[in-house]
Image (cartoon, rainbow, N blue to C red; front, side, top):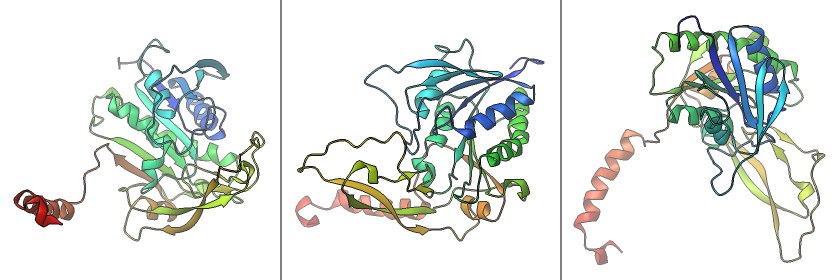
Length: 303
């Protein structure tokens, strides 16, 4: 990034280009008058698609109006949107930073694996571009749309500080940041460096009689809307077909000092992430001995 030149920030998400979280983030970035803001986001909701990409057919990009930004709605996944946005095929320059969010629902623990929001940032990381994923701990019946603005404003200092590190060529290339804002964004306890935990919502399946019985679940898989979406259509299902919908069965929560626990305590959690999924040291030690025994045993005696 040239000295004195405005940083270019590419914004994406998984809730779709019309989502209030993305709009609040873009508005807050534009309002600083410090950044060139580009948007390349899915044209519809793509929650919980993880890091899936479109491979077998082209994707479409349509320019849309967002005040102060150059924006495109794309018929792809969050990872597609980041990949296209940084490629110079859609925009003339490569962004200095990619910010994915703000997601409606937290992304902590094992839910990071499912998250399309985190994948939007991870795709930038794969390509050597600094990135941040941002999520807000939305609670149905307690949160409202204005909370996204509060969450965005709370994250502007982090984004600005990262841009300074990028300009000074000090931002580490070995990670990206995952940021979660607590439900009470107006009264958060400050920023806290955390690590990814193993919290997860345990899900099961139930048989349903029609597609209109499906529940709309946010990308953190904790916020469930039982109302039938307006665009839901009841397709004809043959008697031979069985329909199943996900349902929440329970929660496994962290008791250690991890991202989810700190978020519930009211902190804005800042968690450095990478892409390697290496097992814990005790697992590696076990399988080191186990693999040796496998190679030494005849195949018949292993049964």
